[in-house]
Length: 301
Image 1 (cartoon, rainbow, N blue to C red):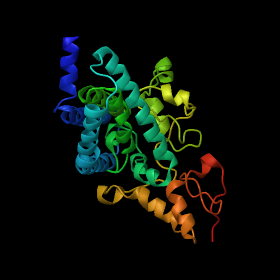
Image 2 (tube, rainbow, N blue to C red):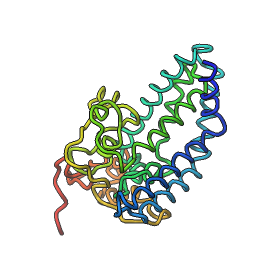
Image 3 (cartoon, rainbow, N blue to C red):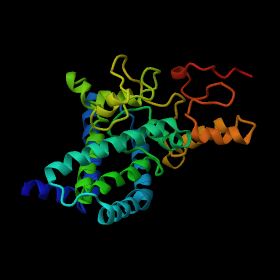
Image 4 (cartoon, one colour):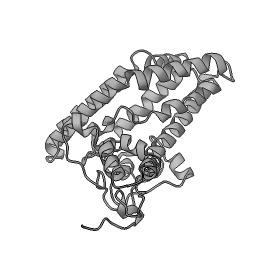
């Protein structure tokens, strides 16, 4: 148990960000080497755009996504926790389940609320699926799961334990963007394997808004949002984006949201686009995810 505690304290300590950075860049480099023979069509421009988006969002997130949530977690843990000194063998699975549930609902809301989807859409805007896209994001994306983290703090999960679990699950989240991993049989029905996560990135109607979890399919099964692999997934948005400049590509989701809002003459409808699902429209004409929700397509003028 002492050796396990040492591992937890190391992974959840000051080197946690360096571990994730090493996993991400190491995975990208190794996959690119593999692609020389395994995937000659590897899109270098797209990968560099994803890396640029990752670096920008990570830098901007240092305060909003790390320092403030950590301070809030410690504040709740120090002053409001229900249980003292939870044993490590109990704390780790509780932290994992709490993180997995927070990730699931953060992710699902990001897909079902217009403004949150505008933040999250950049992660889906790559038309490729590989390790470089794993950390492709907008700095305001995914903030809800940090707020949800007050739950394990309130229970009494040590911050170091929760950080360590977060690092390991996020490292898994980098791996499950692998382009070189085939179907894995029964594992695809239990875990969010690369093929199952590629389903989530696909723009085919049967795959849209499915497979939200990070490591397992537990909560997707529980909340009826699972889709299994049938047709080969085609990654990217329903309205594809071909912008390889990170400075402009980061606003792709906000741009599409503004385009939908601009079609509404009333300010009440414009505001509704912020909290309604992305496929909603004020006039019943779908301007996003139309194949999935079978609404009327815009007619040519």
